[in-house]
Amino acid sequence: MANPQLQEVKDILSKKQFGKLFAGDTENTFIQFFRYLFVGGFATVVDWGVSFILFKFVFQENYAVAANSISFVAGLIVNYVISTFWIFRNSKVESRLVEFLGFAAIGLVGLFMTMGITKLFEIWLADTTSLYQILAKIVSTAAAFFWNFFARKVFLFSGKKQEN
Image (cartoon, rainbow, N blue to C red):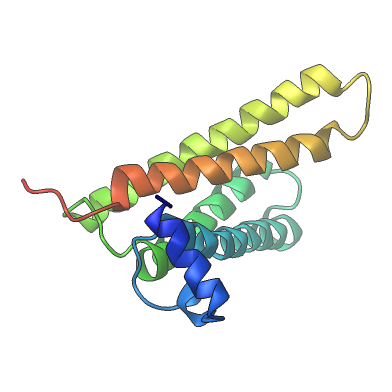
């Protein structure tokens, strides 16, 4: 028997009902993942844009950690707001504050994964190629993206709110 969630996506594609991929509530993991590609991409653009603006006009090069921290938080907030309105409609958590803190904690794990993977690539490949930064960014972004989506789906947003 085929996976019902995958079958739903196949039906949408075969009937050319592409709007269903973008609109309406869904618990279909494939559709949520598809939407998260857009949300994660937009949040990344916000993160990088805020970082660029802060470097260029506010902090210059002296406060890279501050600029990157502020831009990370901006991207995280954008990701949270859009995700909770468009992708993950059913929270397991009663409190929005606790939900956001969990969302942020998962994002921080993703950030630490990115930093760790980048450092590993620097150690492993720095002597053999100058492309380690690009390779590290691709691998670490993909790993953090999958972590962020699936951890948020499993721990915070799949199913109905938990009973106290």
